[in-house]
Length: 265
Image 1 (tube, rainbow, N blue to C red):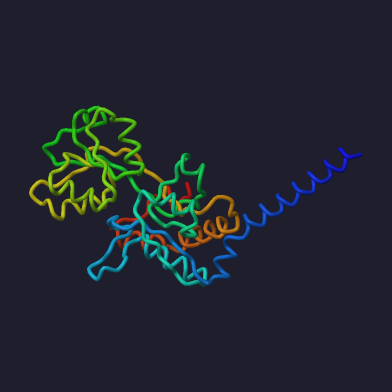
Image 2: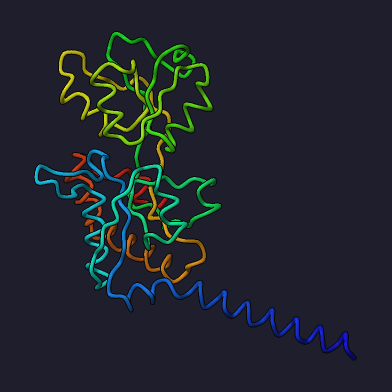
């Protein structure tokens, strides 16, 4: 009899916990709407995506994407300016509701945060001046190569070119400065950062040596928020279809979105 009562209590408690978990999972979108504000984390210092303009105001494709998202959701936008390395922790700790921060969708990150479907993409490349002979990872042996800390570039170079002299920088702006000032011989980054290097390094401009990967970028959100995730996915699909996300991307990057993004792959 006592065992039966105990089991009944355990079943009841389990049910309550399950209901609480479900309620929590479905609350994120409602909480944002109730607050009337969405806190969007953006990784500043990333050319083309999010950076400070001449008036020291946030600008870039991720900024415009965040503005459009907040407008369509019918809430105010609060930008949470962070570094690349803080993108995942910011979502994990609830310091922002979502992150529109050129964040690649990877299995490792998906263990601790959730993502929307891709809203954009980026290619990671190894770039260096013309006289630096690099064709693949093997050629990076003993080459001083710069990467931005805690990015897919960092992980990729660490894995595939461990015998390179890897120098890690806290953000893309510092990485660009390192290339311009000759602190590194090459960088693993994205073309927008190479373009920034070449604006200042006109005598020995950087060029793409080889493409490492093309990564799909997703809007990051905390785990177990299915309503918010579904809204984000529907919003991205609608704005890919009507061309608004492509227009934002082309405005800053000078090219259309990858076909993989447009097709939803």
